Amino acid sequence: MSHLKVDFLRILLTRRMAVSLVMGFSCGLPLMLTLTVLQAWLKAEGVDLAVIGLMALVGLPYTLKFIWAPVLDRFTPRLFGRRRGWLLAAQAALMVSIIALGRADPVGNPGFFAIVAFLVTFFSATQDIVVDAYRREDIADEELGLASSLYINGYRIGMLASSGGGLILADHVPFSMVYLIMALAMIPGIVTTLLTPEPEVNAAPPDSFRSSVIDPLTDFLRRPGAIWILAFILFYKLGDTMASAMTIPFYLDMGFSNTEIGTVVKLFGFWATMGGAMVGGVLTLKIGIRGGLWLFGLLQALSTAGFAILAQLGHNTAALAGVIAFENLSSGMGTSAFVAFMAIQTNKRFTATQYALLSSLMGVPRVLAAAPTGYLAQALGWVPFFIACTLMAVPGLLILLRFSTWRIGAIATAGFNRN
Image (tube, rainbow, N blue to C red; front, side, top):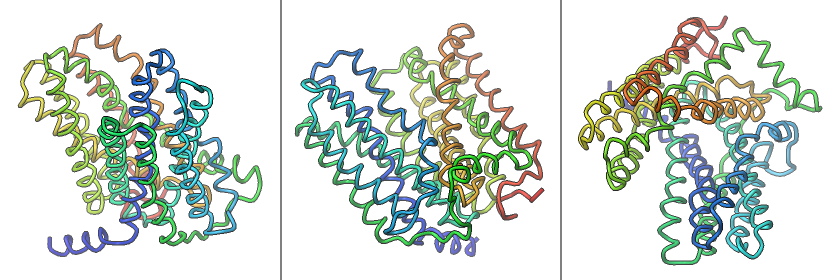
């Protein structure tokens, strides 16, 4: 046990893990500046609700980032290398665009305002692409679970800083100042990019249109079981995603107040998710990514079933806290293993392109599977609905069972063997 603790601390206190945490913060910070904070600003300015809703379209770069990811794989900036060069450029442009958004006029010049907001999401998505590629290339396969958990926690801290911190600041200073402060909060990420080394990759980068766009796809699809890997990415968190889409209406139906929801679900749940991601990262060091996917997948399914129990109990704050703690812990653990799994599937020659494609695919259930959940909840009732969501976890676990010798990565310690 002491040997395991020493090994864990040795890995945790490395430059690579610190970079994962800081880069997670830098990626999470801009997200809410074009969502929660932007919506609050537009509402305060008296902008029509229909226009506020349309502003959600500026977030399209987050789902379409695979389109320009091949450019980041193929070309290498003259300074700082392929990953650090692009990352520094994206972070500098992001910082400038956040400041520009704060100085834009949402009422007097809404078109320019929307363009600048779009630039914020574009440069933010570009930063995401490069950070994901850097983490894959910088971290050893067996350490990806822990690095992913630190990245996720940093990401959530960044989101909390920009959403919660930004809204609190908006009660005391103009929104232009809020955005300036948030832009300055990008400095730690820029400093980290300057100080951290370029990852060593033996494979040569793509040198043509075909090798940067077509080859990443054919490289992945030619692998044994490639279609099943894609299916697994679609189904692994499907039940969890469907249940999450209806939780707020469910809480309200159970008689919980907005204060109870905010305190227990949001604040308490935030720390539970952070703890879950960290525990998931630590456990994957011991049991490997495949073992983690199995264990955390089962826990995710059981936690979804907890909502069915809560539906039977009704308004019970203690039960709500228990369900939220279990659900967020298991979701955090599952996400850390899942993100590590996707990273390890990429070929280091095409890391940015392949990871962007896989992460975009991961977001499909969040949109498509969540869309009909309201109809299902109305038709079935809350208890059968959450039971159905629990059962939706089965396909992902069956796919994992189907590939007992599934090649998850290049090392046996990840939990899979080569085909």
